[in-house]
Image (cartoon, rainbow, N blue to C red; front, side, top):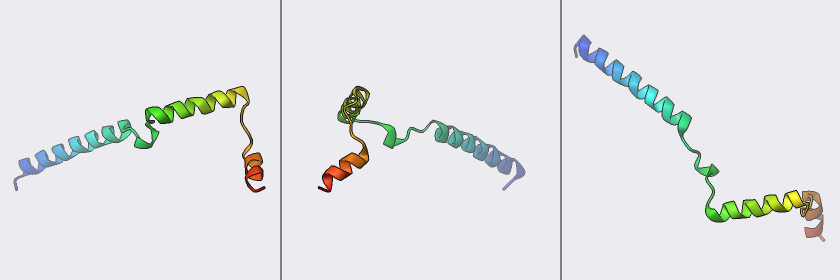
Length: 66
């Protein structure tokens, strides 16, 4: 392999590395995407929370153990 070929390979690898870094920075986490149903349930839960229609976890657990 010639020196010119080696240099070209190194340039390509550096370019690939930059592309990979960009992809990693802009990749969407699949766990953060909500389905329409999940988004609706989240909205309902937030509405209930803001209206004060929620229970503390400790209260819920106490009720479940009775």
